[in-house]
View 1 (cartoon, rainbow, N blue to C red):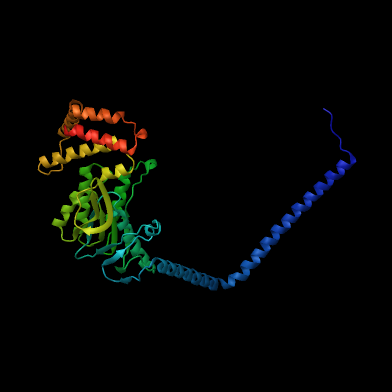
View 2 (tube, one colour):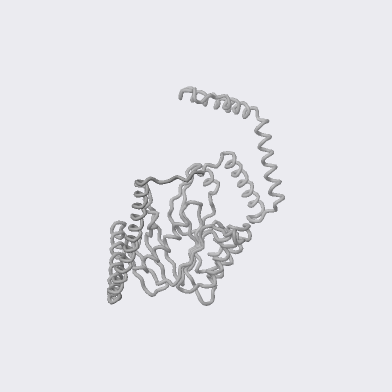
Amino acid sequence: MRKQTLTGSERYITDELKTLEVKILGAEDKIGGLEVQLFDELVTRVAAYISELQQNAHIIATVDAIISFAKVAIRQQYCKPVVDDSLIIDIKNGRHPVIEQQMKLDETYVPNDIRLDSEDTQIMMITGPNMSGKSAVLRQTALICLMAQMGSYVPAETATLGILDKIFTRVGASDNISSGESTFMLEMNETASIMNNISNRSLILLDEIGRGTSTYDGISIAWSLAEYLHNHNESKPKTLFATHYHELNELAEKYPRIKNYNVATKEVGNKVFFLRKLIEGGCHHSFGIHVAQMAGMPKSIVLRATEILTTLEQKSIESGGKSSLDSTETMKALSTQALQLSIFETADPTAGQLKEMISNLQLNQLTPLECMMKLHEMKKILEE
């Protein structure tokens, strides 16, 4: 292989490039050294004023926080809370500071009252449907207490709050599969930590305790927790207890400081409207199937779930209101009901005729008048 030789001009250019590279590297070293020198000089000069700088930074940060509190309070019409040494939480028309700012222009946040104390209403047992606003009530109470003790105004009409030492929450669902901990195990770990650290000045939020296990296990654990919090020898922590276990409403009849509340709903025909208002008294409906329908669950699943619910409720009534049902008898009843529905559906000639008429309809090709005529025809068949 022939070795390529450089011409005179090429050697000159190469030498010049090497020289330039050396100069650049030297300049970068000088720049780096100069930066270090200037930084060291700055640190040396500032070291004599560290306490003054820290004090000024603290003052600026405090003013910034107070101005932020004031701007939000004016814009959102917050009130000045009364923070005292009592054991009372008394909030009138409280609101969730985050949710109310994320609502649409044509929507208004529904405020709610909360009163907790150690003598009359230590535990509020809150029942109500899914999506009705139980969790929002729990969270807004904790946020209002926290904001008040930070020195901020709070989203409420009035608020009188005794100082809290701890805010405990057991909400949401998560797991730690990598460590072998299920959702329910984490729930129990967090709940155990709460129970072992309560005091008279604690606020506890319990949301759907016991839902990660069987119904009877869950009810038993939730019931026992409520009793423990009520009967504790040394502490009477203020507690908001949201649950779908309607059986827990019976606790209010047994213990004087447990009170039942529910988030109101209104049924109009087959529709359910969530009023988002916390009222006194227990609730015995969860409307879970209705929520499944709102979520877009296939209609056949919703209808079948309604049939199963009706059967289970009827079995409960026939057994004297007991919540426990023999699984074999329950499944036998469900199978019998499904079989009977199938027999009537196929044996009734009128139903078969109507089903055939509906199946043959070409809805996209019918005028409104033709639709009315078809309905009139079907009604006439039923009357005959």
